[in-house]
Image 1 (cartoon, helix red, strand yellow):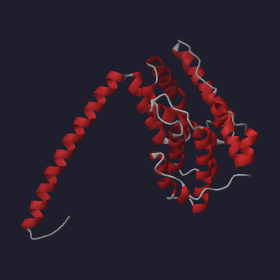
Image 2 (tube, helix red, strand yellow; image 1 turned 30 degrees about the horizontal axis):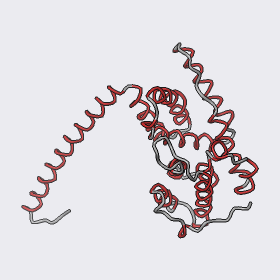
Image 3 (cartoon, one colour; image 1 turned 60 degrees about the horizontal axis):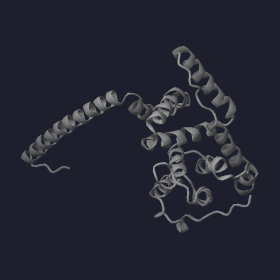
Image 4 (cartoon, helix red, strand yellow; image 1 turned 180 degrees about the horizontal axis):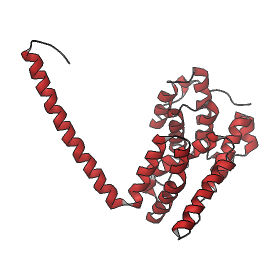
Length: 252
């Protein structure tokens, strides 16, 4: 491999706030040498995506960074983290698989190539509920079959999660299409892999666009109950403090 590691201390964390978050998560479970390997992939991806913007107007590199943070929170290994950072360089930047092999090795190149191929799979636009459910199940099976390494699917889940978090930048019709695909394909895949935190986030974000009025009603209800709970806890705290003070006890 031709890649040179980038010491964490020389990476400019001020460039992108998400990079700072990624480094913080990596420090929780990776050795310094492994963190440097991940940051080398970041430097490579940043160079390839330089000048590219998301529909939101933000630098494109924020997207693979966010995907890498999600993978790091799941404590995936170094090749998977590198693949998360590089997952769009083949499709969007003209980088070849052989170039990735040279720079990062066969394992990383295979993961990126797998993620690129999965990106081409989309849910057909069918109208019947039964037909749509069958198509969704077939597509989920195809995802798993094409990705002979489960890390590829996890990278795609992380990719989709950030896309859902930034879906406001898309046209309303695309928001509906992507949200339906998320609810029918990606959330069930996350459930099958036992990644419940990603499943819950995907379903919540998709629900926001598929059922906006119901989502708003539930959000307001949750916020109201939270305020009520906080007021109740505040009252209990005051009562406890008064009781402790009356008993001559000091506590926090």
